[in-house]
Length: 399
Image (cartoon, rainbow, N blue to C red; front, side):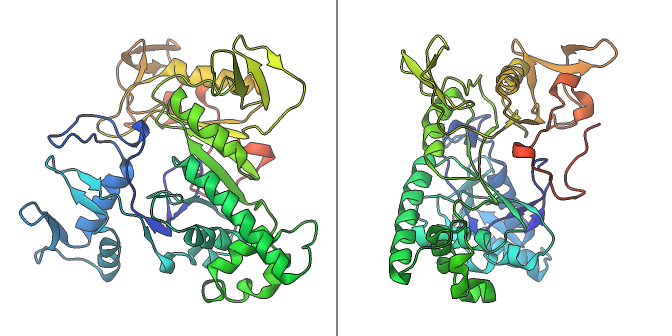
């Protein structure tokens, strides 16, 4: 559990480590001899953690080896040991995931030890719905979140299909628990939430995992924000309908790294109709609504260009286009960064405050995250449903 520079959260919590690339947003940049593309910050960070723990990669043996010349603390070695089987080094000297997901029971209880209300980004170094993780392991993570109502947990996944499958499974587990107990939970509670608590276990939760938790676990968990990443329209069309199937207090999308224009008001267009995920209405492809009834909708959109050494271009108009859609429908928007290469018509640009115009050049901040470098209309950082973040130095103040 650590503080973070991510502007829409305060701390990261990683009870699961490791990952596998499944989407264009997972990496961009120059391809190496082995055909892999660079770009995933978590991969790079994992490799750095292993090296800081006293290891060096041996290309000859294809494994991490202890470097006796390196000094390291017990804590840095422990962190390195956690990641050394999950990441390798490719022919270009870049860290790459092995595709293995590891559940770490020791990390599970970290939020329980923090009393002050805190915003947590869950699994910043992985994906909660990764391949190979069991339903029970995912439920244990939700159980800890259920036992920490003072905190806000932000989940992002690129594996929306697995997420939807897991929610169907856990609802079934809740129904079995309710039947076994022989009574219905109070109106403000649910056996489904308590099923998650039971999978976390009393050893992790202590007194919070007692049988009384059955009547104290509302569903969906009010402190959990469920989100998907959507870097292009293709990913939005695939993942948003699955997200909207899942019960959540807040449903959100991270459009980062933004690799093309995304219209959340025309999701899953089939040439005749689409779904307006910002209002919850079906629409004709010409934009006119179909029917009066509203279905589930998105509650929050985060926008951001790609950062890092090999950052791909992000057209400024892509962000502005999306923000106009949010403004028209009253959906809160949060601009995290314009990225390492904001462009206009393909030309890298920087904003000149003296002329109030974009001009050819590069941002001083390599991530494009310094709001002082942006025009006024991009300095938007709103929160869903009137949410007020807990006081923290980690969250920026608008200039």
